[in-house]
Length: 555
Image (tube, rainbow, N blue to C red; front, side, top):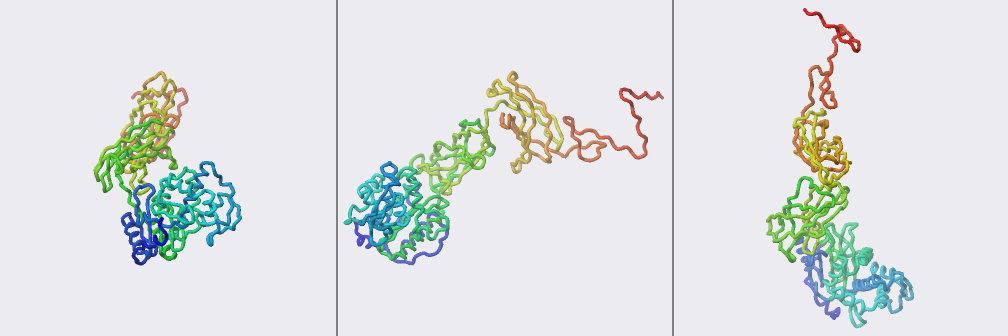
């Protein structure tokens, strides 16, 4: 193991520190800014920055240097404690006593003889970096067991001292690996990972990674100080996803190291990282209809909008996933696996068929599609484009319908329509009370500007086909519209949606109408209105009921 003196000998050239809030940076700019910051740091620095969902770090400098961990070793102690709690061999409520051997000259906040629970000891060890509770846990759990757990997790360059002759050491890469696995909930169970992350988020020493971040930004992290060694490492939760950030410094006064690590955190938080690739899509514009619960093929067009070719397999391969959301953006379904996008060079386009499962509850949904990488990580949170199309999930159709509606309608006037229907197998031997659901769609904007239903009648089991007759009152519109219609039963669509084009004109008027507002009869259009009798004219004779007027004599 390297001693502190050997580690401190790895100093880097001196340049002024960056100060202030940096501008947002893309991936290349972030690397350039971090490199300039590291070169300007007056001491040794190991930096590791990564997206936990990407196997390649975004930035690494001195990532494999073995550095004295200071209080970062407490991360390993917490891991072993949580492993045992997960296994049921240790409980949060178990008592632990602070012994005289656990007390250090500074950083020990509880006197010898203090009795507390394991939960309280872990909380003090992590959130305020209490040394007494940390050493009490270290002695209880045993350094050999702690190191064995690290090794089994695959974190080989993180070593907890076996005795006073050794140092606690780790590389920035190993600490980064620890937090990467924790962010992905792969260190222990998901429940244990959540407990560890929540405890790290309650960290009280926030003068480094979180120092220059906006209020409310969540950071799950652990600090470390020992002489001229100053560290901070953890997960910064940005609007573009989590970022693992490790800053380990040596041979530098604490104040300068704290400023350096704070600047690293600020740069990483501000960066808008480029996704590994992106895509453009061609998706259905009108609602896709499907029986509830049915799996249906949906053909889309996909274009490689990135700068690198996609592979058919391996780390350069990408796939397409989908999710269905209903009212109030409630998730109603998602793809079980990604559909391989296949090999595709930049700007090339191909057709791809997705297997989409219609939600079991009938209704209107929005299907959103997006890319995932070879590890199954959704790239939308990194800025990759998505696309959406409507899907209407319905009960099995009971009939077909062909509506015969005049192409010329008059606003708010009734017209005669016929609906020819044929029963489908789903109709079975039941009686189905049907109505016609219709929507007037503005062809310019594709917006529904009027809609309604017209009662038709019953589909009887003994009749496989027939015709419904009904009156249709045109909506109060003028102009050319697309009329979408389908049969409905108890509010649910019962036939395929069809469309026709209609022209809606001003209401008609007839000779003798008092005004331009037509009177609408139930089936036959405007009622006839008698003209007003001129003043002074003789009243017409009244013919008694049941009698006819006498015929006038022939001249």
